[in-house]
Every structure is written in structure tokens, then in C-alpha cells.
Length: 247
Image 1 (cartoon, rainbow, N blue to C red):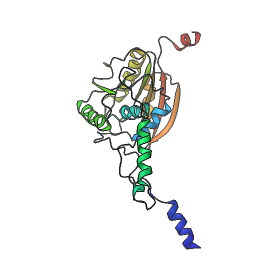
Image 2: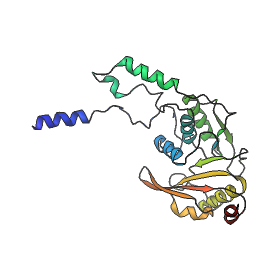
Image 3: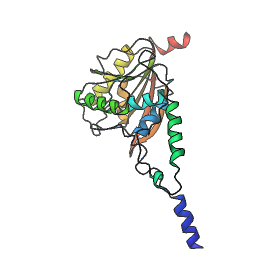
Image 4: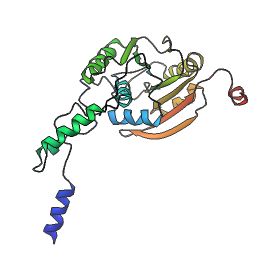
């Protein structure tokens, strides 16, 4: 009957979370162009970071990529700070079972420190770094993530290999003077200062990619809200690609 069908539809449409799950409760402020938390986590997983090598975001903004990387590395449930899930109001909600699940999740958290590997964020904008530090503290990750106040050109990469993942300004909401020269600088800096690093860049201004001047290893097409973007991988090494193949 239509009534029975309506009941089935209502059961299938129960809202278990309430507010969107990307709202992890650690971001007190998002800065000028915040990256969606779920998208940030997805980018890190797509980049195949091994959770053992250095992870750097040299244009960290409000720190979303840094925090999501630390959550992944420590096996920390991304919504551990949330308490207002809609399912707690269901008649069938079992509080004791929910607390048991939360405690089990907490017991599976991996404790790491900065001696194991480094998660570092940097930004030229001091206000952005202040926002980032507030968000990191709220997430309980101050012992894991380090911050630097410097430009990408002047950033000194930690020794050994690692991962660099960042979302540079692309002229949509953040305006950068001479944006083409800015992207050319990114390519030059990667080539000369980030040897042995695996670099991943997200951009929604696709014509700017050619100004990086490096040949991508991998490309993914995805969307940041309604904006079509590319998530591009560059493997940074000394010399020419032909020399790398020979070796």
C-alpha cells in the first residue's frame, strides 16, 4: 500500500549524523578559503602517503590537510570530538554500546611524536598560522604538528624523503599578483629544493598547471564543491628523467 511504502521510505531516510560529517569540530575558523575536511582526507589517501615519512603542507592556510594527515597517521577517529550525532535521539539508541564503541576506538589510537617523522605546515600569512594553531590545539594534535612562518621559496625541506601536499592559491577566492609567475616559482622551487620528495598539488585553475614546468607523474580529476580541479603528482629527483630511468 502507499502507506506501507511511505513507512519504508521514512525508515530508509533516517538522519543518523545530523550536521554534515565533514564538520569534525576542530576547525574554529576556516580562514579565507578553507578546504573541506573530507576532501582533504581523501587527497591524503589518494596520494598514498605511508604515514611514516615527513608530511609537509607549505601553504597550509587553516591547517586542514595537516590535521587530517595527523588524524590518519594516529588512527584517530575523525569525528571523535563530536557528541551531537542524531542517532543518539533514536528510541533504539544503546548508550552503553555507544560508549563501548567510543572507548574501543580511543584504545586503537596510535601514539606518535615528532621524532618518528615530521608533519609540518607553513604559510607566509601570520594570521593564517594563528588560525591553524588554534585548530591544531582544538584537535589535540599540538605535539605532532609543527608550524613555520615562511614563504614556499624559503622553506627548508627536512632531510630524507617525504610527502608534500598543498592547495596553492588559484585566483578564485584568493588573489595572487602575477599568478602565472607564482606557479612557475612553485615548479622551480620543487625541482631545486625538494629532491626525493613526492609532491601533490590541488588546483582548480587548470591553465596554471603548464606554468609549473614539470611533467606530472599522475593526474586525478575531482571537484572542490562545484569547481572542477586536478590533483597532480610530481616525483622530484635530481637531474633529468632519462638519467633516473637509466639508474
